[in-house]
Each structure stands twice: as C-alpha cells, then as structure tokens.
Length: 307
Ligand SMILES: C[S@@+](CC[C@H](N)C(=O)[O-])C[C@H]1O[C@@H](n2cnc3c(N)ncnc32)[C@H](O)[C@@H]1O
Image 1: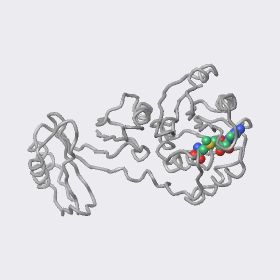
Image 2 (image 1 turned 30 degrees about the horizontal axis):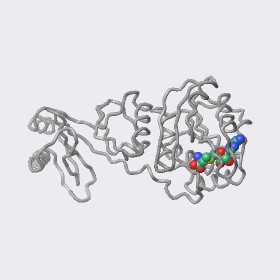
Image 3 (image 1 turned 90 degrees about the vertical axis):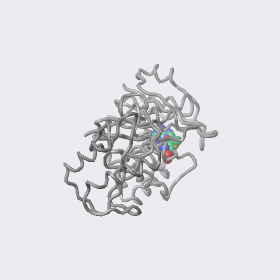
Image 4 (image 1 turned 120 degrees about the vertical axis):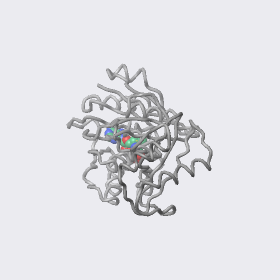
C-alpha cells in the first residue's frame, strides 16, 4: 500500500522540531507531502495533518474512473473531496467536476456534511491520486489534565520528544526519569507505548499519578525515585532537565542528571535549556539527531543520543 502523509507546523517556532521528528520517523529530510509505503500510526505526530491511503493513481481522471468501476465499491454516506496541495494548482470548478465524475462508479449514498467515509483526489505534478482520507485530530486528548505546573512541557513538545526517541518503533521500554507531573508519560501512553516515569519529588510524583489515573492509566507506572538510583535498564529515556524553577539547578547539576541516564538507557532524548552538545559528547554519547523549539522566551534543545 502507498500512502501520502501531509505535514504542517507553526513555521515560526516549530520548524526545527518538525524536521527533527521527520528524520527520526522516516530517516529522510522533511517533505511536506511525503509518499511512502510505511504504515505509520500517524496520530502519534502533531505535525501530520492528514493521511491519504492511495488506492489508485493515474494520468487522467478517466483512468481512475475505470479502476474504480473494477473495484465494485459500495459505501453509505461517503464524500469525495479535492485535496488542494501547494505543489500543483488546479481550477476549483474543474476539481468539483472531477470529484463528481469519480463518485459515479461508487454505489451507495453520499453525505457531504457528515460523511462516514471520506475519499480524496489530489493532483501532484502530472499524476492524480485517489484514496481514503484520514484526519489526525486525536492527538491532543490530554490537554486538560488535572495537575499541571508552570514548567510542564507544552503538549506538542512532549509528544514530539517521544517521537524523536521512538521513531516508528512500537515496542521500546521507555522511562521518563524526571517525569514531573507526567506530561511525557501521558503522551507516550496515549500512543500505546510502554512508558513509565519517576521523579525525586514526592508531591510531583503524586500529582503525576493523579494525572494518569484521571485518564484511566495505571498510576503505578509513576513512582518516586532519584535518577541516580535507577537499576532497571531501558531502551529509551526521555529526560526534561530541570532548570532552577523552584531550586537552583546549575549547569553541573543538569549535566549530572544527563550523565546518570548513561548507565540505564541505550538511547536518550535530552530536553535542555542550553545547548550541551560538547558536554554530552564528552560523556561518551553519540548524537544522532538535534533540534530545538523556541516560542517567545521558551527555548528548549532536544538532543537524541545513543550510548
Ligand atoms: C523540568 S521538570 C520535568 C517536567 C515534566 N517534563 C513535565 O512536563 O511535567 C524536571 C523534574 O526533574 C525532577 N528532578 C530533579 N532532580 C531529580 C533527580 N535527581 N532524580 C529524579 N528527578 C529529579 C524535578 O523534581 C522535576 O519535576
């Protein structure tokens, strides 16, 4: 099966993040319209807007109509829309005619307002693509968790941090060893991943447990623990390094936490306020991906490393 993934991001402050995530998942440089045969669970990414599962492609509409007749399709309440793209402009009236023509071979009923199934046609350069259109609307399920605090990561950044670590894998054993109120853990769980969290602060860990419970996840996935005492090993750690919000966390203290991950995680996504490239390399890690997020005075470096 061939897919077309359509990406979008807030260009002012998310460009580096979106490009970094794309590299982590697809191992290529970012493309806004990306064709691949990879069946990626797209709801994991906040940057994927839609996915078109391509059923047919061709140089003319009649070629697609012919193929659809051969499919003998029947759908109740379907809709066919033209998906506008920024590569190839087509005339609006013409796109409507194409969509009407493509509905001829499909039996059943149409519903343009509340369709049960949406099909889309798009033309990129000289080729028409037709298939099933899916929207990615479910990624912000945990926007309103009961316990939050001022230095929690924005949801979009937390979710992307997970993706930077997991790429397109699904079976990694993951920990957030400085989990705060559990933003990263919640996002990982909503993606169906095997993730746990710990934090040295008793009250914060308690709040994180409350957040997990609120969304129906096992609160025991979070516990109180100093990162230096972690004995279990993990495929991936995602660490959002503290920065003197409630206590003075100087550079040495931050680096000490990053270094602590070396002994229990094969791969680490480090979220830091400063660029610690040199220091991280000096610890023996190999940097495999780097990006950053900046929105007004909120700045984070996201560095993915391997042991
Ligand atoms: C920047 S906050 C994490 C915020 C979290 N990502 C969120 O969105 O809620 C860093 C956390 O590291 C924890 N921390 C500091 N020193 C620690 C240590 N030695 N072991 C484990 N956690 C530690 C702090 O209690 C704090 O909750």
